Length: 320
Image (cartoon, rainbow, N blue to C red; front, side, top):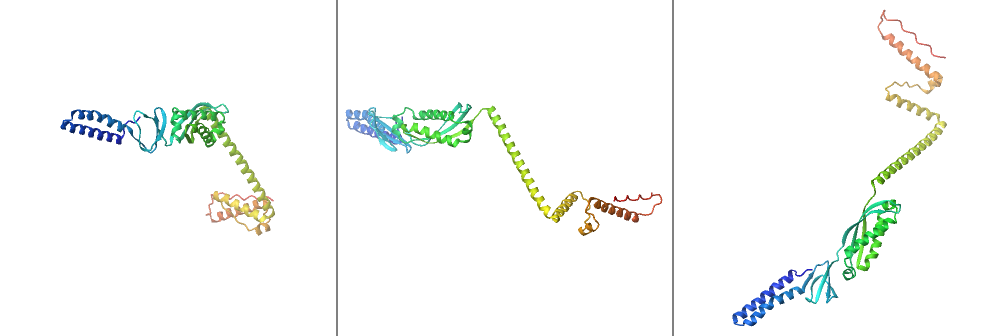
């Protein structure tokens, strides 16, 4: 309870100093009895007046009881009371109040023990009800929030509790607000901060999530293979109707393969292939062996004659 403030203290000093000054003046004039009475009454009057002056801050509301009954709700600012007759039991803070609460080892609908932490934001909208209708509104709101949280957890599946925190918060806000409104308190919002589950269940859920990711990867890979096979089928149909495109594609694949191995490519016109009947495997083999034989003959002609060198081995005949 606040007995004095800056204004009441200043008034007390002024009244006490004025009374004592007046008593001293009368004492000098020979009015000893009057001087003594003023000197005795000055502290009492100063204390009485100073005690009657009260100041409430902007965010405060003051409940004033007169002879035990509700008299008025004062504040903010300067106001006066009658000492001894009036009594101030509560200074109510009407700002938004944030309080944390939690539910430990509470079973969900699917019998999983969880620990849930939440924060409650509320505000006093009727200071008279908050002071007269409930003994300790802060404690009452806290217990109401804990009870509501346990009720909501018991009616919710674990998956919904983990994924639907916003929905749980709105439900908690609605339940607690219904309980708190008769006390003159409005619940602004409830925020679920954290949901803790047993470590063994965390490991099992992690394995389940990993298996689900692997299943999705296999499904995606299988779908990709199906799409590739479908595209190959469409390409085969295109090449079947256009042999020239098929040969060009084959030459491009051959070029790409030989380019990586630093090999030599012999380009033969298609008319020559048709004339020499080199379209088959045997024709291509004969052409390759003929080119190899000519390269060996040219190398032998350019090499210096050496009697000790053995005679070159004749090239094998191409298969017919």
